Image (cartoon, rainbow, N blue to C red; front, top):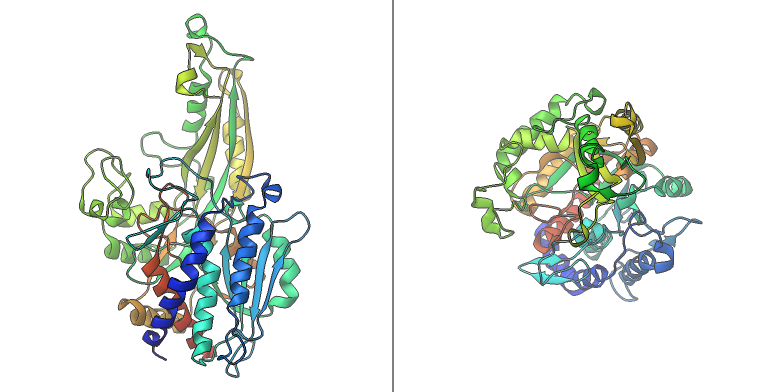
Length: 496
Protein backbone atom coordinates (compact mmCIF):
# COMPACT_ATOMS: atom_id res chain seq x y z
CA UNK A 1 0.00 0.00 0.00
CA UNK A 2 1.24 3.46 -0.90
CA UNK A 3 -0.07 6.22 1.35
CA UNK A 4 0.11 8.61 -1.57
CA UNK A 5 -2.59 6.52 -3.24
CA UNK A 6 -4.91 7.52 -0.41
CA UNK A 7 -4.05 11.22 -0.53
CA UNK A 8 -6.31 12.26 -3.39
CA UNK A 9 -9.46 10.63 -2.03
CA UNK A 10 -8.86 11.71 1.57
CA UNK A 11 -8.14 15.29 0.52
CA UNK A 12 -11.24 15.27 -1.66
CA UNK A 13 -13.40 13.95 1.18
CA UNK A 14 -12.06 16.63 3.49
CA UNK A 15 -12.73 19.40 0.96
CA UNK A 16 -16.14 18.22 -0.21
CA UNK A 17 -17.61 16.61 2.90
CA UNK A 18 -15.71 17.02 6.17
CA UNK A 19 -14.93 20.75 6.02
CA UNK A 20 -18.54 21.74 5.26
CA UNK A 21 -19.66 19.55 8.17
CA UNK A 22 -17.12 21.14 10.52
CA UNK A 23 -18.15 24.63 9.41
CA UNK A 24 -21.71 23.82 10.48
CA UNK A 25 -20.40 22.25 13.69
CA UNK A 26 -18.49 25.40 14.68
CA UNK A 27 -21.70 27.44 14.44
CA UNK A 28 -23.35 25.49 17.28
CA UNK A 29 -22.52 26.62 20.86
CA UNK A 30 -22.36 23.03 22.14
CA UNK A 31 -20.72 23.94 25.43
CA UNK A 32 -19.81 21.19 27.84
CA UNK A 33 -22.22 20.71 30.79
CA UNK A 34 -19.80 22.37 33.22
CA UNK A 35 -20.27 25.59 31.26
CA UNK A 36 -23.93 25.15 30.33
CA UNK A 37 -25.96 23.65 33.20
CA UNK A 38 -29.07 23.82 30.98
CA UNK A 39 -27.41 21.83 28.20
CA UNK A 40 -30.32 19.41 27.91
CA UNK A 41 -32.92 22.16 27.51
CA UNK A 42 -30.76 24.13 25.07
CA UNK A 43 -30.26 21.05 22.89
CA UNK A 44 -26.91 22.05 21.42
CA UNK A 45 -25.13 18.84 22.40
CA UNK A 46 -27.97 16.88 20.88
CA UNK A 47 -27.68 18.91 17.68
CA UNK A 48 -23.97 18.25 17.13
CA UNK A 49 -24.41 14.57 17.94
CA UNK A 50 -27.28 14.22 15.46
CA UNK A 51 -25.30 16.15 12.83
CA UNK A 52 -22.25 13.89 13.22
CA UNK A 53 -24.46 10.78 13.25
CA UNK A 54 -26.17 11.83 10.01
CA UNK A 55 -22.81 12.46 8.33
CA UNK A 56 -21.45 9.10 9.47
CA UNK A 57 -24.57 7.29 8.23
CA UNK A 58 -24.11 8.84 4.81
CA UNK A 59 -20.59 7.42 4.49
CA UNK A 60 -21.79 3.85 3.99
CA UNK A 61 -21.66 2.96 0.31
CA UNK A 62 -24.74 2.82 -1.85
CA UNK A 63 -25.70 -0.20 -3.96
CA UNK A 64 -23.31 -0.89 -6.82
CA UNK A 65 -20.34 0.88 -5.23
CA UNK A 66 -17.25 -0.64 -3.66
CA UNK A 67 -18.35 -1.64 -0.14
CA UNK A 68 -17.40 1.11 2.31
CA UNK A 69 -17.89 0.70 6.06
CA UNK A 70 -20.09 -2.27 5.24
CA UNK A 71 -22.03 -3.62 8.18
CA UNK A 72 -21.23 -0.63 10.39
CA UNK A 73 -23.39 -0.37 13.49
CA UNK A 74 -23.86 3.29 14.27
CA UNK A 75 -25.99 4.62 17.09
CA UNK A 76 -26.61 7.49 19.44
CA UNK A 77 -26.53 6.40 23.06
CA UNK A 78 -28.02 8.40 25.91
CA UNK A 79 -28.35 6.88 29.33
CA UNK A 80 -30.89 8.54 31.58
CA UNK A 81 -29.65 11.88 32.87
CA UNK A 82 -26.38 11.60 30.94
CA UNK A 83 -24.94 13.49 27.99
CA UNK A 84 -25.26 11.69 24.63
CA UNK A 85 -22.56 9.64 22.92
CA UNK A 86 -22.01 8.24 19.45
CA UNK A 87 -20.84 4.65 19.19
CA UNK A 88 -19.81 2.92 15.98
CA UNK A 89 -18.68 -0.63 15.31
CA UNK A 90 -17.17 -1.34 11.88
CA UNK A 91 -16.48 -5.03 11.16
CA UNK A 92 -13.05 -6.15 9.98
CA UNK A 93 -12.39 -6.62 6.26
CA UNK A 94 -10.14 -8.83 4.16
CA UNK A 95 -10.56 -11.90 6.40
CA UNK A 96 -9.26 -10.02 9.42
CA UNK A 97 -10.82 -11.08 12.70
CA UNK A 98 -11.95 -9.07 15.70
CA UNK A 99 -9.10 -10.17 17.97
CA UNK A 100 -7.19 -6.96 17.19
CA UNK A 101 -9.89 -4.39 17.77
CA UNK A 102 -9.03 -0.69 17.46
CA UNK A 103 -10.99 1.88 19.48
CA UNK A 104 -11.17 5.51 18.34
CA UNK A 105 -11.94 8.26 20.84
CA UNK A 106 -13.07 11.87 20.44
CA UNK A 107 -15.57 14.38 21.79
CA UNK A 108 -18.04 16.94 20.45
CA UNK A 109 -18.57 19.20 23.47
CA UNK A 110 -16.78 22.54 23.58
CA UNK A 111 -15.17 25.04 25.91
CA UNK A 112 -16.98 28.36 26.52
CA UNK A 113 -16.57 31.45 24.37
CA UNK A 114 -13.63 33.26 26.04
CA UNK A 115 -12.96 36.92 25.30
CA UNK A 116 -10.22 38.33 23.07
CA UNK A 117 -11.19 37.00 19.65
CA UNK A 118 -9.90 38.90 16.65
CA UNK A 119 -12.51 41.43 15.51
CA UNK A 120 -13.50 39.43 12.42
CA UNK A 121 -13.53 36.06 14.22
CA UNK A 122 -15.62 34.50 16.95
CA UNK A 123 -16.20 31.19 18.74
CA UNK A 124 -19.35 30.33 16.78
CA UNK A 125 -18.31 32.05 13.55
CA UNK A 126 -16.49 29.62 11.23
CA UNK A 127 -13.88 31.34 9.06
CA UNK A 128 -11.50 29.57 6.67
CA UNK A 129 -8.37 31.66 6.19
CA UNK A 130 -4.82 30.75 5.15
CA UNK A 131 -5.49 27.03 5.43
CA UNK A 132 -7.04 27.28 8.87
CA UNK A 133 -10.60 26.79 10.08
CA UNK A 134 -11.16 29.28 12.90
CA UNK A 135 -13.84 28.76 15.54
CA UNK A 136 -14.43 26.82 18.71
CA UNK A 137 -14.16 23.05 18.74
CA UNK A 138 -13.16 21.80 15.29
CA UNK A 139 -9.60 20.99 16.41
CA UNK A 140 -10.63 20.21 20.00
CA UNK A 141 -11.91 17.78 18.99
CA UNK A 142 -14.88 17.82 16.65
CA UNK A 143 -12.87 16.56 13.67
CA UNK A 144 -12.12 13.19 15.34
CA UNK A 145 -15.15 11.18 14.21
CA UNK A 146 -14.96 12.59 10.69
CA UNK A 147 -11.24 11.84 10.33
CA UNK A 148 -11.53 8.35 11.79
CA UNK A 149 -14.33 7.23 9.46
CA UNK A 150 -12.72 8.93 6.46
CA UNK A 151 -9.52 6.96 7.13
CA UNK A 152 -11.42 3.66 7.31
CA UNK A 153 -13.48 4.45 4.22
CA UNK A 154 -10.34 5.24 2.20
CA UNK A 155 -9.04 1.74 2.94
CA UNK A 156 -12.33 0.10 2.07
CA UNK A 157 -12.48 1.87 -1.29
CA UNK A 158 -9.17 0.26 -2.22
CA UNK A 159 -10.11 -3.12 -0.70
CA UNK A 160 -7.24 -2.90 1.80
CA UNK A 161 -7.69 -5.27 4.73
CA UNK A 162 -8.10 -3.79 8.17
CA UNK A 163 -9.12 -4.92 11.68
CA UNK A 164 -12.41 -4.29 13.44
CA UNK A 165 -12.71 -0.62 14.47
CA UNK A 166 -14.88 0.91 17.15
CA UNK A 167 -15.52 4.56 17.98
CA UNK A 168 -16.74 6.29 21.12
CA UNK A 169 -17.45 10.00 20.75
CA UNK A 170 -18.63 11.66 23.96
CA UNK A 171 -20.03 15.09 24.87
CA UNK A 172 -18.73 15.84 28.37
CA UNK A 173 -14.95 15.62 27.99
CA UNK A 174 -14.42 19.32 28.68
CA UNK A 175 -16.23 18.76 32.00
CA UNK A 176 -13.93 15.92 33.04
CA UNK A 177 -15.91 13.07 31.39
CA UNK A 178 -18.14 12.40 34.41
CA UNK A 179 -20.62 10.36 32.33
CA UNK A 180 -18.06 8.18 30.61
CA UNK A 181 -17.62 5.44 33.26
CA UNK A 182 -21.29 4.46 32.94
CA UNK A 183 -21.05 4.35 29.16
CA UNK A 184 -17.94 2.18 29.33
CA UNK A 185 -19.72 -0.20 31.69
CA UNK A 186 -22.81 -0.17 29.45
CA UNK A 187 -20.71 -0.97 26.35
CA UNK A 188 -18.32 -3.41 27.99
CA UNK A 189 -19.96 -6.58 26.58
CA UNK A 190 -19.78 -5.11 23.06
CA UNK A 191 -16.23 -3.75 23.07
CA UNK A 192 -14.39 -7.06 23.09
CA UNK A 193 -10.60 -7.20 23.29
CA UNK A 194 -9.40 -3.69 22.48
CA UNK A 195 -5.71 -3.90 21.59
CA UNK A 196 -5.13 -0.33 20.40
CA UNK A 197 -6.77 2.95 21.42
CA UNK A 198 -6.40 5.87 19.02
CA UNK A 199 -7.23 9.17 20.70
CA UNK A 200 -7.32 12.23 18.41
CA UNK A 201 -7.82 14.82 21.16
CA UNK A 202 -4.24 15.79 21.90
CA UNK A 203 -1.56 18.10 20.54
CA UNK A 204 1.39 18.27 18.18
CA UNK A 205 4.66 20.09 18.64
CA UNK A 206 4.69 21.25 15.01
CA UNK A 207 2.76 20.56 11.81
CA UNK A 208 5.62 18.63 10.20
CA UNK A 209 5.42 15.08 11.63
CA UNK A 210 3.43 12.71 13.81
CA UNK A 211 3.49 13.63 17.49
CA UNK A 212 2.73 10.84 19.94
CA UNK A 213 1.50 11.88 23.37
CA UNK A 214 3.17 9.80 26.08
CA UNK A 215 1.61 11.39 29.15
CA UNK A 216 -1.10 13.81 30.23
CA UNK A 217 -1.20 15.85 33.40
CA UNK A 218 -4.05 15.54 35.87
CA UNK A 219 -6.20 18.41 37.10
CA UNK A 220 -7.62 19.46 40.44
CA UNK A 221 -9.41 22.68 41.14
CA UNK A 222 -12.32 24.44 42.70
CA UNK A 223 -13.57 27.71 44.10
CA UNK A 224 -11.80 29.58 46.90
CA UNK A 225 -14.01 31.99 48.84
CA UNK A 226 -12.64 34.48 51.39
CA UNK A 227 -15.16 36.50 53.45
CA UNK A 228 -14.21 39.15 55.98
CA UNK A 229 -17.37 41.32 56.25
CA UNK A 230 -21.10 40.85 55.89
CA UNK A 231 -21.29 43.79 53.47
CA UNK A 232 -19.02 46.29 51.78
CA UNK A 233 -17.93 49.39 53.71
CA UNK A 234 -16.30 52.76 52.95
CA UNK A 235 -12.63 52.05 52.30
CA UNK A 236 -11.52 55.31 53.88
CA UNK A 237 -13.29 54.41 57.10
CA UNK A 238 -12.29 50.75 57.28
CA UNK A 239 -8.97 50.25 55.49
CA UNK A 240 -6.15 49.83 57.97
CA UNK A 241 -8.53 48.15 60.38
CA UNK A 242 -10.39 45.65 58.23
CA UNK A 243 -8.00 43.45 56.22
CA UNK A 244 -8.70 43.29 52.50
CA UNK A 245 -10.27 39.98 51.51
CA UNK A 246 -8.10 40.09 48.39
CA UNK A 247 -4.94 40.35 50.51
CA UNK A 248 -6.10 37.37 52.55
CA UNK A 249 -6.62 35.44 49.33
CA UNK A 250 -3.12 36.42 48.21
CA UNK A 251 -1.67 35.03 51.43
CA UNK A 252 -3.54 31.78 50.94
CA UNK A 253 -2.31 31.43 47.35
CA UNK A 254 1.26 31.99 48.56
CA UNK A 255 0.86 28.76 50.52
CA UNK A 256 0.42 26.92 47.22
CA UNK A 257 3.21 28.27 45.04
CA UNK A 258 6.23 30.55 45.24
CA UNK A 259 5.17 34.01 44.08
CA UNK A 260 8.47 34.65 42.27
CA UNK A 261 9.13 31.32 40.58
CA UNK A 262 5.67 29.77 40.39
CA UNK A 263 7.04 26.52 41.84
CA UNK A 264 4.34 24.61 43.71
CA UNK A 265 5.32 24.17 47.35
CA UNK A 266 3.70 21.01 48.72
CA UNK A 267 5.43 17.73 47.80
CA UNK A 268 2.01 16.08 47.51
CA UNK A 269 1.61 17.78 44.11
CA UNK A 270 4.98 16.55 42.77
CA UNK A 271 6.19 13.23 41.35
CA UNK A 272 9.51 11.87 40.05
CA UNK A 273 9.95 12.29 36.30
CA UNK A 274 10.78 8.97 34.59
CA UNK A 275 14.08 9.02 32.75
CA UNK A 276 12.35 7.93 29.54
CA UNK A 277 10.17 11.06 29.62
CA UNK A 278 13.21 13.25 30.28
CA UNK A 279 14.88 11.71 27.23
CA UNK A 280 11.76 12.40 25.14
CA UNK A 281 11.71 16.00 26.33
CA UNK A 282 15.33 16.39 25.23
CA UNK A 283 14.52 15.01 21.78
CA UNK A 284 11.44 17.22 21.45
CA UNK A 285 13.43 20.22 22.67
CA UNK A 286 16.00 19.66 19.92
CA UNK A 287 13.23 19.52 17.31
CA UNK A 288 11.23 22.52 18.52
CA UNK A 289 13.86 24.81 20.04
CA UNK A 290 12.54 28.21 21.07
CA UNK A 291 9.18 27.51 19.44
CA UNK A 292 8.27 25.74 22.69
CA UNK A 293 7.77 29.17 24.27
CA UNK A 294 7.59 31.51 21.27
CA UNK A 295 4.35 29.85 20.10
CA UNK A 296 2.33 31.74 22.70
CA UNK A 297 0.79 35.18 22.00
CA UNK A 298 3.01 37.29 24.27
CA UNK A 299 1.91 40.91 24.54
CA UNK A 300 4.89 42.13 22.54
CA UNK A 301 4.31 39.59 19.77
CA UNK A 302 1.46 39.00 17.35
CA UNK A 303 -0.45 35.96 16.16
CA UNK A 304 1.30 36.16 12.78
CA UNK A 305 3.66 33.27 11.95
CA UNK A 306 6.54 35.76 11.85
CA UNK A 307 6.22 35.90 15.64
CA UNK A 308 8.09 32.59 15.77
CA UNK A 309 11.23 34.42 14.72
CA UNK A 310 10.81 37.38 17.04
CA UNK A 311 12.18 37.65 20.54
CA UNK A 312 9.63 39.18 22.87
CA UNK A 313 10.76 42.52 24.25
CA UNK A 314 8.54 42.65 27.34
CA UNK A 315 6.72 39.48 28.39
CA UNK A 316 9.02 36.57 29.20
CA UNK A 317 8.43 32.86 29.93
CA UNK A 318 9.41 31.21 33.20
CA UNK A 319 12.26 29.58 31.27
CA UNK A 320 13.65 29.78 27.74
CA UNK A 321 15.28 26.36 27.99
CA UNK A 322 13.17 24.18 25.65
CA UNK A 323 13.68 20.99 27.67
CA UNK A 324 12.84 22.60 31.00
CA UNK A 325 9.84 24.30 29.41
CA UNK A 326 8.55 20.95 28.12
CA UNK A 327 9.02 19.30 31.52
CA UNK A 328 7.32 22.25 33.24
CA UNK A 329 4.20 21.83 31.12
CA UNK A 330 4.09 18.03 31.21
CA UNK A 331 5.50 16.65 34.48
CA UNK A 332 5.46 19.50 36.98
CA UNK A 333 2.50 20.99 38.83
CA UNK A 334 1.34 24.53 38.15
CA UNK A 335 -1.36 26.75 39.63
CA UNK A 336 -3.59 29.10 37.64
CA UNK A 337 -6.38 31.46 38.70
CA UNK A 338 -8.89 31.05 35.88
CA UNK A 339 -11.82 33.14 37.14
CA UNK A 340 -13.03 35.53 39.81
CA UNK A 341 -16.26 36.75 41.38
CA UNK A 342 -17.30 39.40 43.92
CA UNK A 343 -15.18 41.91 41.99
CA UNK A 344 -17.20 44.79 40.54
CA UNK A 345 -16.58 45.94 36.98
CA UNK A 346 -14.29 48.95 36.63
CA UNK A 347 -17.13 51.37 36.01
CA UNK A 348 -18.85 50.18 39.21
CA UNK A 349 -15.75 50.05 41.41
CA UNK A 350 -16.23 52.77 44.02
CA UNK A 351 -14.18 53.45 47.16
CA UNK A 352 -15.55 50.40 48.91
CA UNK A 353 -13.72 47.73 50.85
CA UNK A 354 -15.32 44.61 49.47
CA UNK A 355 -16.74 41.99 51.85
CA UNK A 356 -15.33 38.97 50.02
CA UNK A 357 -13.16 37.67 47.18
CA UNK A 358 -13.93 34.52 45.21
CA UNK A 359 -11.36 32.88 42.92
CA UNK A 360 -11.53 29.89 40.58
CA UNK A 361 -8.37 27.80 40.99
CA UNK A 362 -6.92 25.24 38.58
CA UNK A 363 -3.95 23.09 39.54
CA UNK A 364 -2.32 20.90 36.89
CA UNK A 365 -0.62 17.91 38.49
CA UNK A 366 1.92 15.35 37.17
CA UNK A 367 0.56 12.29 35.39
CA UNK A 368 1.32 9.90 38.26
CA UNK A 369 -0.13 11.99 41.12
CA UNK A 370 -3.44 10.79 42.56
CA UNK A 371 -6.03 13.50 41.90
CA UNK A 372 -8.19 12.77 44.95
CA UNK A 373 -5.23 13.07 47.30
CA UNK A 374 -4.13 16.26 45.56
CA UNK A 375 -7.63 17.72 45.88
CA UNK A 376 -7.72 16.95 49.59
CA UNK A 377 -4.31 18.56 50.03
CA UNK A 378 -5.49 21.66 48.20
CA UNK A 379 -8.44 22.03 50.55
CA UNK A 380 -6.32 21.36 53.65
CA UNK A 381 -3.70 23.97 52.75
CA UNK A 382 -6.23 26.68 51.96
CA UNK A 383 -8.63 26.21 54.87
CA UNK A 384 -6.23 25.69 57.78
CA UNK A 385 -5.42 28.60 60.12
CA UNK A 386 -7.33 31.28 58.21
CA UNK A 387 -5.59 34.70 58.45
CA UNK A 388 -7.56 37.14 60.65
CA UNK A 389 -10.03 34.30 61.26
CA UNK A 390 -11.64 35.14 57.94
CA UNK A 391 -14.27 32.72 56.67
CA UNK A 392 -12.34 30.65 54.13
CA UNK A 393 -13.93 27.89 52.09
CA UNK A 394 -12.59 25.81 49.25
CA UNK A 395 -15.16 23.83 47.28
CA UNK A 396 -13.47 21.29 45.02
CA UNK A 397 -15.04 20.69 41.61
CA UNK A 398 -12.27 18.94 39.66
CA UNK A 399 -10.31 15.81 40.49
CA UNK A 400 -9.06 14.09 37.34
CA UNK A 401 -5.90 12.00 37.51
CA UNK A 402 -3.42 12.15 34.68
CA UNK A 403 -2.26 9.40 32.36
CA UNK A 404 1.11 7.78 31.72
CA UNK A 405 1.39 5.63 28.60
CA UNK A 406 2.43 2.00 28.99
CA UNK A 407 5.71 0.92 27.45
CA UNK A 408 5.33 0.76 23.68
CA UNK A 409 6.42 -2.40 21.83
CA UNK A 410 9.34 -1.88 19.47
CA UNK A 411 7.23 -3.06 16.54
CA UNK A 412 4.57 -0.43 17.07
CA UNK A 413 7.15 2.32 17.54
CA UNK A 414 8.84 1.25 14.31
CA UNK A 415 5.50 1.31 12.51
CA UNK A 416 4.71 4.82 13.76
CA UNK A 417 8.06 6.01 12.45
CA UNK A 418 7.33 4.33 9.12
CA UNK A 419 3.90 5.91 8.60
CA UNK A 420 5.17 9.30 9.77
CA UNK A 421 8.06 9.19 7.29
CA UNK A 422 5.74 8.16 4.47
CA UNK A 423 3.30 10.93 5.35
CA UNK A 424 5.59 13.79 6.41
CA UNK A 425 9.09 12.65 5.41
CA UNK A 426 10.02 12.83 9.10
CA UNK A 427 9.92 10.20 11.87
CA UNK A 428 7.46 10.33 14.75
CA UNK A 429 8.28 12.47 17.78
CA UNK A 430 7.22 11.77 21.37
CA UNK A 431 6.26 14.22 24.09
CA UNK A 432 3.95 14.58 27.07
CA UNK A 433 1.12 17.09 27.00
CA UNK A 434 0.02 19.45 29.73
CA UNK A 435 -3.72 18.93 29.30
CA UNK A 436 -5.99 16.32 30.82
CA UNK A 437 -8.06 13.62 29.09
CA UNK A 438 -9.76 11.57 31.84
CA UNK A 439 -10.87 9.01 29.28
CA UNK A 440 -7.31 7.71 28.93
CA UNK A 441 -7.09 6.66 32.57
CA UNK A 442 -10.52 5.05 32.36
CA UNK A 443 -9.54 3.08 29.24
CA UNK A 444 -6.28 2.01 30.81
CA UNK A 445 -8.24 0.52 33.70
CA UNK A 446 -10.71 -1.23 31.39
CA UNK A 447 -8.07 -2.55 28.95
CA UNK A 448 -4.77 -2.92 30.82
CA UNK A 449 -3.18 -4.79 27.89
CA UNK A 450 -4.09 -2.17 25.27
CA UNK A 451 -1.60 0.07 23.52
CA UNK A 452 -2.32 3.75 22.95
CA UNK A 453 -1.73 6.18 20.12
CA UNK A 454 -2.74 9.55 21.52
CA UNK A 455 -2.21 12.36 19.07
CA UNK A 456 -4.00 15.38 17.64
CA UNK A 457 -3.92 18.58 15.64
CA UNK A 458 -3.53 21.16 18.40
CA UNK A 459 -0.20 22.62 17.35
CA UNK A 460 1.55 25.99 17.65
CA UNK A 461 -0.84 28.95 18.00
CA UNK A 462 -3.95 26.76 17.56
CA UNK A 463 -4.94 28.09 21.01
CA UNK A 464 -7.37 25.44 22.22
CA UNK A 465 -9.84 26.82 24.81
CA UNK A 466 -8.74 30.37 24.03
CA UNK A 467 -9.59 33.06 21.46
CA UNK A 468 -8.79 32.55 17.76
CA UNK A 469 -8.75 28.75 18.11
CA UNK A 470 -8.16 27.04 14.77
CA UNK A 471 -7.74 23.74 12.95
CA UNK A 472 -4.79 23.46 10.57
CA UNK A 473 -6.54 21.85 7.60
CA UNK A 474 -3.47 20.48 5.80
CA UNK A 475 -2.21 18.80 8.96
CA UNK A 476 -5.63 17.30 9.69
CA UNK A 477 -5.71 15.82 6.18
CA UNK A 478 -2.22 14.38 6.61
CA UNK A 479 -3.07 12.92 10.02
CA UNK A 480 -6.15 11.25 8.51
CA UNK A 481 -3.95 9.69 5.84
CA UNK A 482 -1.43 8.56 8.44
CA UNK A 483 -4.16 6.92 10.54
CA UNK A 484 -5.37 5.05 7.45
CA UNK A 485 -1.86 3.75 6.82
CA UNK A 486 -1.46 2.70 10.44
CA UNK A 487 -4.78 0.84 10.51
CA UNK A 488 -3.87 -1.05 7.33
CA UNK A 489 -0.51 -2.11 8.79
CA UNK A 490 -2.18 -3.47 11.92
CA UNK A 491 -3.20 -6.52 9.91
CA UNK A 492 0.13 -7.84 11.18
CA UNK A 493 -0.93 -8.92 14.66
CA UNK A 494 2.68 -8.90 15.90
CA UNK A 495 2.74 -5.11 15.85
CA UNK A 496 0.43 -4.72 18.88
